[in-house]
Image 1 (cartoon, rainbow, N blue to C red):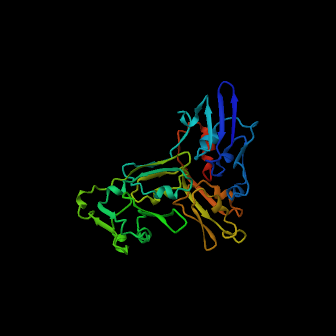
Image 2 (cartoon, rainbow, N blue to C red):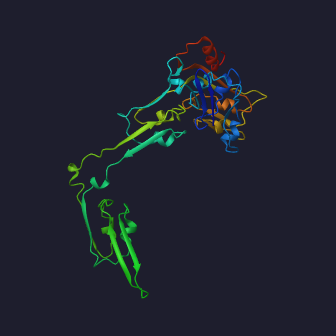
Image 3 (cartoon, helix red, strand yellow):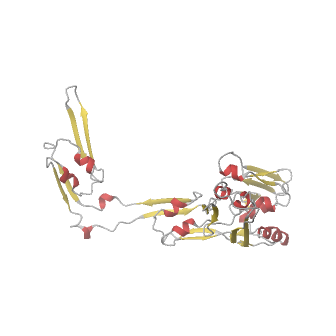
Length: 336
């Protein structure tokens, strides 16, 4: 991480957060003064070394802000007089977003479990199970021999038995308890008891109409400063409650030749650096699922064979008012 400043008519600050960086190299490609340098992304991704993916030459940086604007993942942050330039109207802004429809979300947690960048905050509030079952249970401790059959067989783990020695002559202080908040009154304990010491009645079925429908509430929020716009969350959502707008449109292909072929099983550099978990090794070759690819280009930078061809057909960046900035920013697109 770095944080550099320049004072003049304006106070400008440029900071870099390695946590958000995916190693795409867009910032280093467009820097007009070549002040930014992309580090060894494959060894870093594999945990072989610890270092920032991007470094800067402070003396040559002119604080133009292009790197901050061009970074779709907010790894670089430029401010002018304390205001983040992506909030200043005269600067370009990405038309990218990750949105959860609270009204449609069913709090199933599939998005939370699959997110490759830990960008989702998930909270689920379940009703108390004790409010959904009805019944009675009683243990006659005079008949109970504390064999623990009931505790071992209880599917809800609602029964606790303790045998605590109180002397050296094999006398035990026996204890048995049923946690009514866990008990589902299924009757297994009653059936397994060899001494018929348990009385149990389940009235859940008889009172079924009186039991309220369980209400499940919660909260799901996507942290956009950590989101890599891979669309995993959107793809797995069973109720289509998540909408992802990716920063780029385009394609990614693997183009081999007689001299250069994919060495997927022995190399897998592309798979190691991919922030989206979009790359798999199938039959010894690298395969990218574009449904989950954000077209960042990290895999292209990592490929030692130079056979991954990235074509960005559009970048969802708006409000580019300067012709020179337009030329530089659109250079992110292949062929421009």
